[in-house]
Length: 114
Image (cartoon, rainbow, N blue to C red; front, top):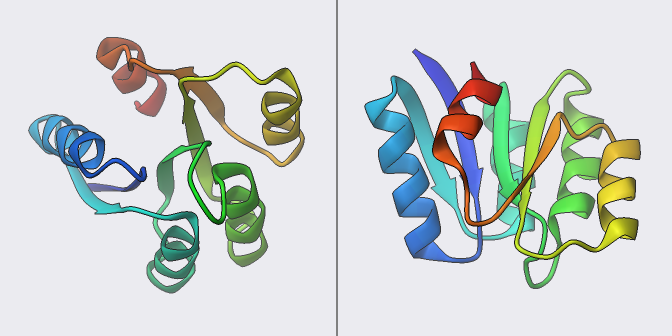
């Protein structure tokens, strides 16, 4: 089974994404902060992370950077409701596999993950 870590400070978003991914054959785990995501991704070695950019404390780009230090092959797809060009450019430089806008287009997300 494919494994994915879902990260968003909105518990309802995490729950929804995990439920949809589970229905599509993914084993998903949800967490609610960038720092928690780094700890889980580095300890459990998830191959894919789906993570919000804008979170309090450690944001998604900083978490991406820290996760890539643990596992450079990690695939991270970032999500955002905001289009801050500088943050998106930084995410690309840090090695994000992709950036999706919220609300999430689930068929596009599933196609990207497959």
